[in-house]
Length: 290
Image (tube, rainbow, N blue to C red; front, top):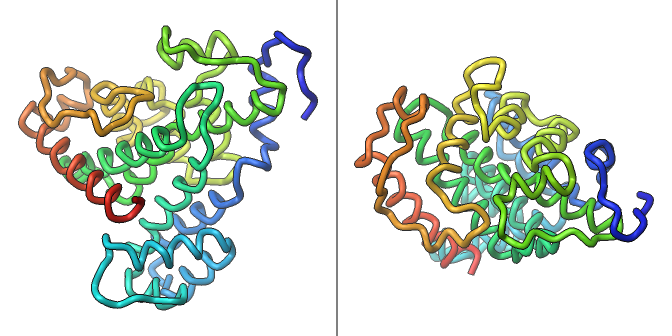
């Protein structure tokens, strides 16, 4: 990628073109895309999961480490990937795989955003759990897909940060403007659009790419997309770019959107979602990724 002269901003076209060819972000998301396919495959078995994870040594090591963590403690320690997957089970192995991939992607600070790696990871994890709990509360969507959508909702930031760095840097969010306004002003495109291009380049399911793309305005989707509506709602009630550990389980007001009205999400139900999310987030953070 050719670096820009000092003080020259990248254009939207440059950013989107770079996303199509980004190679140094990580190769692990390709594994996640195949894992999503396994969830929908009635003939999938443990062997396919092990074979898939084994294509990335870092992921395999992380799965074994996690299987031996306090979160999955059962008195049995495992030393191989096949034993780890056997211990965890099919669906839990793929759920853990999705978290491990985003955790690996979030290993570096987002310098141009001023967001430390641990804050980006915590925000992604909290959103993943929150949207999953919304799926369970409304009984209107697949919790596993919802979990993945929440985890990946801000992956466009990683791409924008990497591309700005590759082009010579020099752009920094100072926190005075909402993040999407800063992105539009500085690079001409919001992270949600970049994320959707990234997911389509990696050949993720279109329903998931569309949900990420229209997370700020679900009505723009060609058809009703529950995941886009859930991400939009999460964005309304959760602070962006802030450590989610500060999130309260009490809600002063529930935004009156079509998503909220359709699923009859009153204050009591939303607070219950917050409580379950915060409890699971705290436990996972303390015992799985401490």
